Length: 282
Image (cartoon, rainbow, N blue to C red; front, side, top):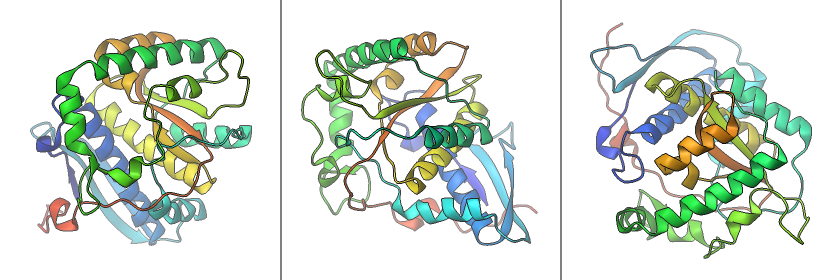
């Protein structure tokens, strides 16, 4: 099986260089590897196999049957249950062993989850608020956002309106993602970053695989997840985010993790849109 990036799917305002497209493909690649492994095969994977075709991101060949690792089986079982939860989370604290498991999941896919202290979280909170205001002042961003969110229930692409129900309509959620605020010392959801040592196409692909392993690990632990996108999508904010994280790590994903309410399944594109039945070389 070959995995190809489809440049027609790039969002020109929020993802002009296709970084998030490659991340998404990396997440899909990890799902494919996990499913193959859970079925009892070894998913032999070659990343970026062609210099002539940079959109050919990976080739996966299921090899000789083997007993699947039970850890991988648990990840595979989590695939149909993973959701993006945009609603407020409960105040319950994520246990430290769970955080350690998420960090280990990141490292298994050759990415990094930096430790965030209280001062970094304060800086991230302010940066996120500023980046969000910049996005909301950009008519091109608002137009692109409107084309992909709040859609009808029968649409097979984008984010349907019912997936946004219960999400805060204003910017107050920004202050709740990064720990306690003045006069409100309640526990807050866990905020984590996934980063890479470089920002090239290969490391972005690896970070996408790490993202999916983290999300499936979190799902298996009963956690919900959603993306904190403004400081990643706004170019200047991402550069500042890199300075905040330190260690020379390139930030690829910023997540909040916590315990939320059950969510309905959201539609997916038809399989015929993404799977082409063609032969590849042995």
